[in-house]
Amino acid sequence: MDDKFIIRGGKPLTGQVEISGAKNAAVAIIPAALLCQEECIIDNLPAISDVSLLVDILRSLGAKVEMQTPSRMRIDASTVSTWQAPFEKVKAMRASYYLMGVLLGRFGQAEVALPGGCEIGMRPMDQHIKGFEAMGATAKRTAEGYYLEATPLSGGEVYLDMASVGATINIMLAAVLAKGNTVIVNAAKEPHVVDLANFLSAMGAKIKGAGTDTIRIRGVERLHGCQYSVIPDQIETGTMMVMAAATAGSVLVTNVIPPHMESISAKLIESGAKIENGEDYIHIIGPERPRAISISTLPYPGFPTDMQQPMTAYLARANGTSVITENIYESRFRYVEELNRMGADIRVAGRVAIVNGVESLRGTSINSWDLRAGAAMIVAGLMAEGETQVRRLRYIDRGYANIEAKLRALGADIVRVPDPDSIGY
Image 1 (cartoon, rainbow, N blue to C red):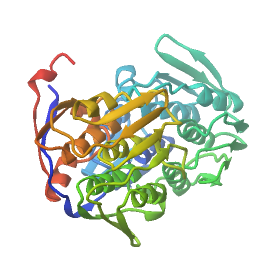
Image 2: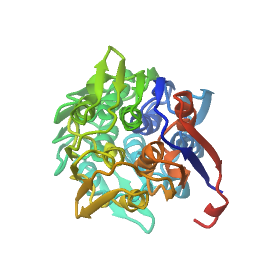
Image 3: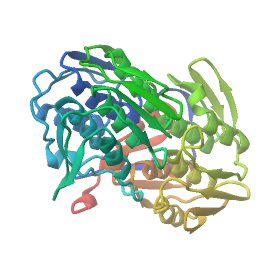
């Protein structure tokens, strides 16, 4: 049985909230620990279902994994001897495809099912396979996924047709133990790409250029254990900022890296919010009613696609008409029908949403269709008049740690209850 949130909106969020570790960094760093045959300790992990699933996958592969605290993990991968990932568990999450690069890099072979995750559009594997083949691997499509083999895995030059985060990370994971030098051209620049590079470097990898569009990797014979702390979550930070703005609240968001938030902060300021940045905090004060703005999602350092849905929900109450252009994924507006059921006036034409702001939303029963759409539903519920029920929380739990407790501490009226109607989803 799934759970649902019951939200009684209209309460400004006030106070202080601490951001958890970055989901998108954690789901790459945890598999990366398999490249090392010594103990690694990873701190500042978010308490989310994707992390729990990765623990199960690593244990299925033979690794010794201990959660020393809810945010601190010890991994000893010296006992891993298989290059075949557990298919059913792999299919439950998108980031499990990083096992391809990890197992190929460590064993020269990998058999991994096609990953699952949120249905937000086409996320093909061709750039990943292109990178592995440039390093001498052969890829065979199987009934479940892919079988990869390289004898040996060697450095190569990879030009990515698009700045794919997943392909950049997967190629990095395979390259750190490959013989020779690997160059990734048109690499993704996102903060979690840099964080993974820093983790691999802490284990002894030789990586230069992470955070630029060209990453150079010199393969090493082996990696050693380390202790590492994951960066704060850029998207959780942005989501909390939007929630504060949407409720005309005043919230101090701590454990953040303000330079990572520049594109989001700029759009919130444009909408009428006031923002003050500190060394590791952001203080945001929301407007009584936001101004309409235009947003186009782009790879980092542009406006992140993962913030498109919460921001659209926020702009549903804007004064004027906002235009949201989704340039990354072609199927990321499914949630709009839920907002319209709450009284929003949003029209979608292909990759563009036209948001005609309304004075208020009204509470009703709505669904989370994916992780970030779930965050948008919470934003809408916090703004709406009356009671909102947000269903299908399993998506939200994939990426937001203890979100209802954090919101209650800021004054939100939100509770989690079982959803008997979820049986059979």
